[in-house]
View 1 (cartoon, rainbow, N blue to C red):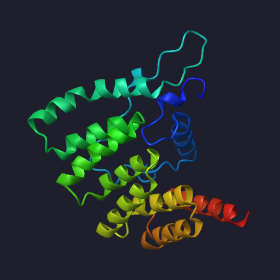
View 2: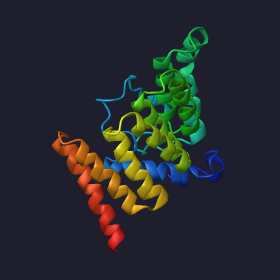
View 3: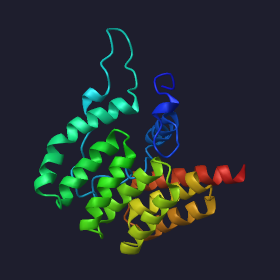
View 4: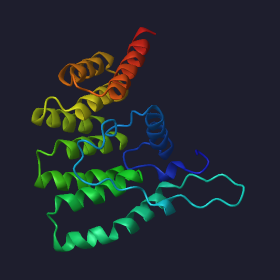
Length: 217
């Protein structure tokens, strides 16, 4: 992957593309990607998958190569075109804005994604699910403090929101090296969501155990 993505293709935040892909890949492998632990029950806008064309087709017998961020940006722009056309006539359609944001989020264009999530939030500022998605994008774009601010606002609006509490812990842990603060957020998650599905509870407990182990070392 590092051979396919150069430092010149880094995000505007100063993180290299390798770092962005690496962090996202690690989180996805653990099932702990920011904003995705409880997807389905809370996000209002329909999820939009990354275009299949974003990954260049491999030659016969050859493995697929990871596309560059520029290639993924190009494909996201193409997929978003019809939605952006709709926004010209209906610029305050929060659902369409969220769909555009999710296209850019799914192709690792986190700055663009957070901008569109922000526009949707300007219309519906109490939309906790959208604010949590925006926080994820800010985090992956290197804006740790911005992500924390959005998560805190989400929890002001809904103190029991499981996604926001989970992600607050992840950002504190990975972004601020604040293990104690992370554990506090996850403990609050479990305390305020007693009906949490067993598999999701297990995920939270797993990451708590990993944080404690790291704290002890």
